[in-house]
Length: 364
Image 1 (spheres, rainbow, N blue to C red):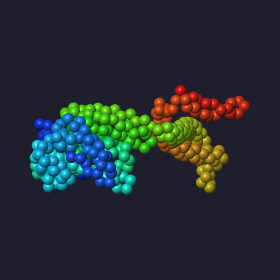
Image 2: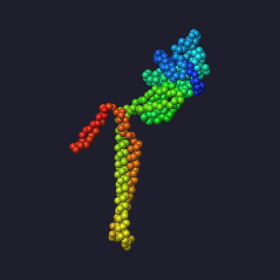
Image 3: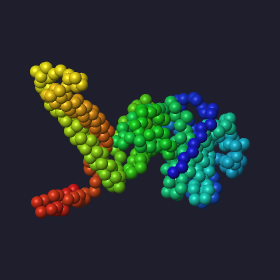
Image 4: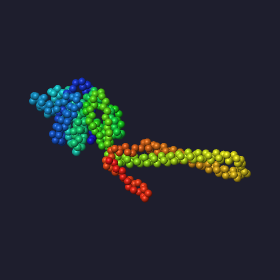
């Protein structure tokens, strides 16, 4: 569903100390059946009435209120701004809701306008675009609520959303307003439709009621699709194998480094004692002779092994750190098992003395 909205500046700022009278005129039909437009006009009337802060007049109410023939004739000018003030004055209403429903190609377009009847000023506009007729009712309800949101500023309450998934789109009355985790937000009082959507998950939706000055806590537990669960489990297994492999290599490297350092330290201590006992002196060529030459070879070997121990130890530490990171930051296997289909069977190969056997684990 594509959504577009606009709010015209200059909205009435007065608080709704008393119930504001508001009249809903029939939506114009532009390329759609007239009955569809009338039905959607009733949807607008019902949606605004459920907010509980307006006295809403429908077209039927208007027709009953029109006593004189001249007043009846004014019903034909509901799309002309010049006579909206006359209708508002005749009905004693402060605000008029007008609009249209049409079709452009395969898409339905809904336009609503809120007009101050005393000044003939458009206070707010809302537009929705949907691709299917089944989506029209929800789109019109959402547009109706957003149309009067500036008037409900004094009726605000807080919404505290606790969603089970991050990076899910948060949609209120047909408008995407952010992504989870979504901070505490103030919303206009009255009913709203809250919807969360995320690729790979079933869309979560709920009708909520915001009350003035009261926080509403909503817990949204999103259910993943089976395809998402399969892909997630595969990714989680891959990350976990990499984490364990890197961690294992890291431990081996660190173990070798520590053990090699201790062993080589013992060799160095023995070498120092042997060197002192040999009382080596340089020959005519300036190089050690006899046993002293063998001690020199031992010394070089100790230094080389010390270098190897340090390199392997540092590589082991790096591998251990990488394994720890992959283990902590990677996806956790099995967190979506509760959503798997009942009766599923997991098949694998189990090694035996005579080869391998097929084994299965059933979930019921």
